Image 1 (cartoon, helix red, strand yellow):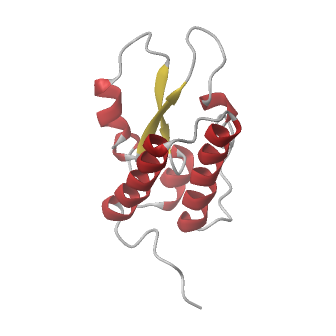
Image 2 (cartoon, rainbow, N blue to C red):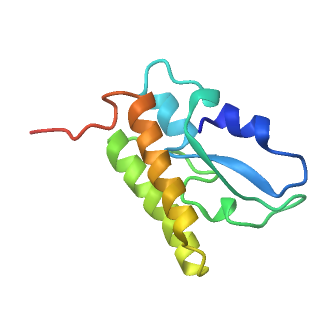
Image 3 (cartoon, rainbow, N blue to C red):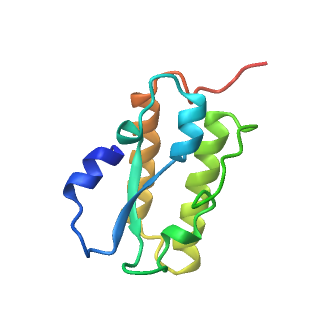
Length: 120
């Protein structure tokens, strides 16, 4: 789902936040026509108030994007990152795997051609 769609279904105090994959900063720098609300995201735990949860553990949280990566590489890296966080906590279950597959497909269909393999 898009970041904007996830914001609409989230509730204050639910300890969840939409997490862009690839990061919002990366997509803004690399994809013409991209907007934060259109970015593809997944709900991830972010404890409120204060710090905590899975969101701050992600590679892209509060970091500048690695613009040397291709969009395909950034997508793969950030999916792997979220997967490894859930796996390390013993929570990498079917629902998470399914959500990450859907996120990959949503990125590919929303941003046609951006995540294609580069042939050299």
